[in-house]
Length: 421
Image 1 (tube, rainbow, N blue to C red):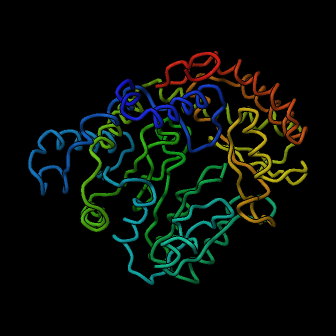
Image 2 (image 1 turned 90 degrees about the horizontal axis):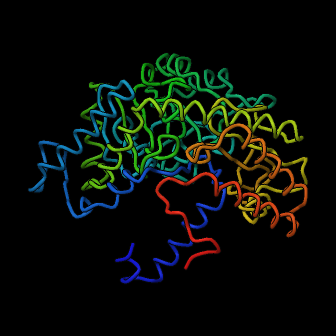
Image 3 (image 1 turned 180 degrees about the horizontal axis):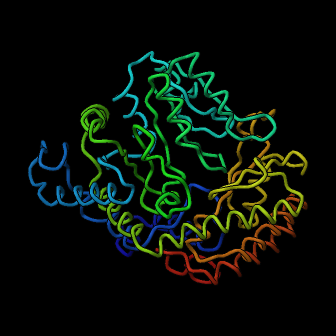
């Protein structure tokens, strides 16, 4: 960092302040995590200098013999880790990976199905403001009004009615297991491809604490951060029969040269995910989420679906006198980072919805366990009950700081006490 400090002190100062924030606070956004120093080293390496359009053994630029080795290692590790026949590790992120699936398997105007965004789905599964809802004829399934669980009967009915080309299973704010076998039965009964987006649960699948869609889905996409604990990036997994159209959709269909430093960092993260301790990590993520959920329920909070099977939970704040945005802001003032989130059938607008979403991947990476989750639930309750009282927020923030000082954040040097020098 010394070179950066000399070359650009403004950016250096902001990065140091962000380091302090990440160290001092509780990172509870479910899509965030801490990567290892090894992943950071690969991501910030000289591989950013190289350009390598194409695939291993068939590049459009010279000097790629070592890049080929790195990408092939990443592909092999992905296949081995998830039990897939083919892996493409070049997508820049999750949304481009999903876009490649559309390009490979559907034509503009085709009917596609996905989970409604306000009920837990993702923008790229056919939401109207996204390319997937503009280029394709998208229909959206949802959850049951009472249980907030996926309404499989509705999925069946819509599939028979609309005969989609692709059905998506996966979500960004759904705290329960996915029944991939049932979704495959529905999709294949109407001649649709089943695409499983496991961006949130990929690490839990690797750890063996969440079902895998690989035996059932025609194609699987995932980001490489979140619970997988790698760099920002994405992968597409598929049977060998779909390898050619998927690869052609990524390159040259959607993008040029891959980010080779990102590919190397993905390879490192996949090696880490294959270690025995990663299984322990994934299991603890779920234990922590369930302990957090249980304590919040005990304190009178309403959880969507009543709890969680995975790494995240969604709180309905309707009975607590604050909106999702207000809760996000006052918890942030207390050193607890969450994100506002819609709840199913939310009467409030998305920018200021009725809920918040929070999770345990980053906290677990720091080594926190069930007793710590119960303490965090108490802090959340105190802050929200106080409606953001400055004194309460200041007290909780100091207590949060005292806790986080006991749990080093991987890849972040311990900041100086009292702030950035």
